[in-house]
Image (cartoon, helix red, strand yellow):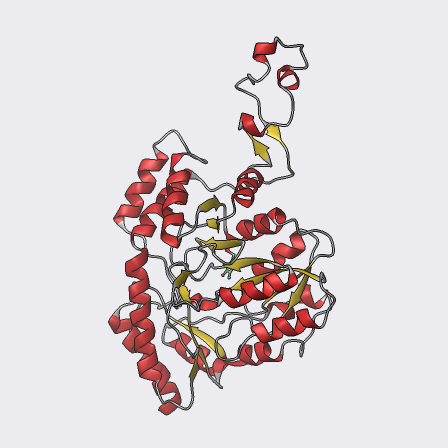
Length: 403
Ligand SMILES: Cc1ncc(COP(=O)(O)O)c(C=O)c1O
């Protein structure tokens, strides 16, 4: 028996992280300062996108994406029911309508055939966009979704919260990193403690679209710009409606700024960004360790009739989660808890949440997702999980089923 609790996920905070936060706290900037730009550029480089915008959390990132893409009253947006509720909620924040589409039973990702079926049986223009999720760290094949999006004039948001460092291989054999902006209009990440990169709270939006990037920067800070080339008011309004000399026409006073859109305060702090930067230094090793842990689980469960795991080609999987499906899920969950192993369920299908039931969703709407939910369980998966701890988890699961 291992005495300490083994959770399903855990952050890895080291001395470098603590030192970096401490330095940032002693600087002149507590809210957005130079560490934000440094974090954004390091993240964009890691992911392979042109632009990155740091925000307060993944939910704020999703909200800014739906705002920037102009989601409005009644707009229909398709997403998966097997994700954290925020992937759908961002549509509701803007008054849009969430249309759930079922998952693939092998990959647990949104099923392109189910999406195609929805699109092809409705008049063109019925749907505005798609929010796909690299669930558990497994990359959605965005090349396929992009073709569909072009055919039906849809935008794509990639919720890549689970998949920094993940990728899929495109039809030309190229690795396409999750969130690299080559296929989706916008992608988002979360820096919640159990994620690959932890900031406590934090999020990032990546894109290759300059217009959207500029819009996101503004929406992140109340819809305000301080860049004179973007001002729409004349210089005389800026000064207080005084007539100006011709040569002063474009000299805006230092205090001047404009609120051009209805934005929010979704900024990340500089000390969180400092943490994000040092966390990124560990990202590659963390990913490597996650893959090792997954491979060990796979090997241990190979050929066991009482278990099913996420199958198919798992190249590029970032393993935020390691999910199994079993028949006696509740019994196994409770048994493991008595052994100090705290597994988790990802996720209760969003369409079955009381809020979405009140909007008309019901049991039976998404049979594959609902069937997946009956048996899914996330096992401990985090880079600092020790070999001894993983051996213990495996032995207890095998013991539960085989005695
Ligand atoms: C798939 C997914 N999307 C969105 C979010 C929201 O991120 P945050 O918790 O940073 O707001 C999460 C976080 O748990 C998530 O797992």
